[in-house]
Length: 132
Image (cartoon, rainbow, N blue to C red; front, side, top):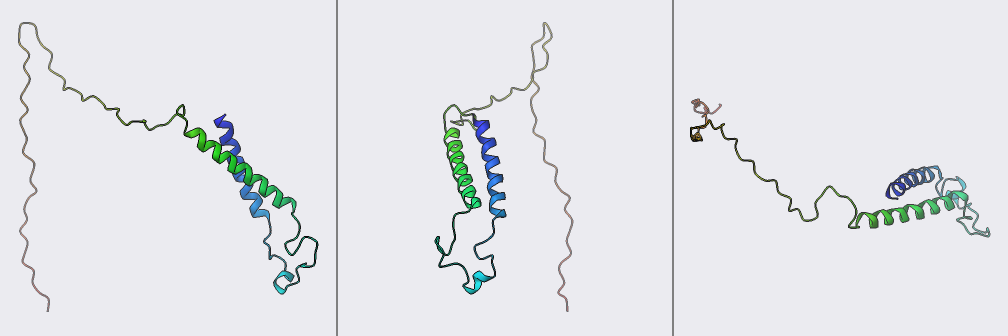
């Protein structure tokens, strides 16, 4: 069901973008800028509700419902997540491999000796001379 809702949500999103871009603005006519819009009409200056505005409203309602439903479903305990709920999963540290023990001889572990860190060669710097 979640996959169906995601597909529906993406489809409605693309349709909503296309519907809004296809509509013309309120002041698209040249006469509207000079006050020639039909203010005496039955539906007022805005005009009646067109098919595109009804389609936009329907797509917006479907988009909102799918958004809320997907948000609700993602918060359910049965939903899968890549994040653990408590964050307590720890990886056990690996033990170093020991050399194979030969029969009759005790196993010895070589002692780890710290290695000195290599030092960068020191280059003498010439004293800075002021420019004149």
